Image (cartoon, rainbow, N blue to C red):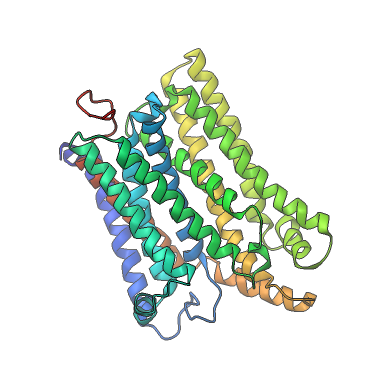
Length: 387
């Protein structure tokens, strides 16, 4: 528990706990208020809480995949922070649970999800996949803490992470009433976004914790490549909508390029390009040994832009799904009305801001505690990682 004795760490923990408490208070008040500004009734579109849920699940699975793969593939630099990666994954997944519970709204809705379990529903499978992922991360951290073999737990983490990503991607892809989600690249796009944002989160946290990730040229190059691939998927989807030239796909592409969702889409594109440039700059500094401080700050900036780009994509992803429902010949007026309703559902309000801060507070607080309880990575020679 030596880490928790640091005054700066305690200050961060105190702020995170305060944000978490504020978010949970807002959720409780929202759940018992008949009329609210979040649209939590079943008839309302999914809003910002759902977008943040899939963002945090991507961060969780991506960072855990980075940590687990560093063990199985024996990537020395990332392997030094594999414990940090999986601790971030576990903390982010619990933050994601808070967002999905706030999206469900009142407590009867949450209980109905638990009591109405149906093996034929992908939502029910998500209720299996998410706890399984948390267990896998916990097993890995415990093995790291007590110096046990890590290859088995790492394989468990990879399997559980992919299972969760598969289920979440299929939930959206098989929702046939939403044209924007009927994409043949949904599953690989989910995986790429998760690993891209997860690696970025790992690099940010490692830098903030003094682990010097800016000295890992391979990870910096991978961060740039994944950010580029993620942006490529986004631009390709929009381009295909224009190529088809009619119907709901064209309407969605137009809304993303110069409509009510253009701000989020172009922010994602600009942030991704800037992140690629910064990551490659940091990689060049690493190869030339141009100075630790410069590379550290550039690495943090690149990682932050990647995470923000993925978050922007999740926001317009949810919004576009409700902007244009799948219909034989949707009218322009009907689509515009639906787009306005979806835009309002994902808009910024006092409650949505508190809920967003609450999930972030939960993540930060749990990460600080987990990092204090578990080693950072496998640089300890006593760890039996090859057993």
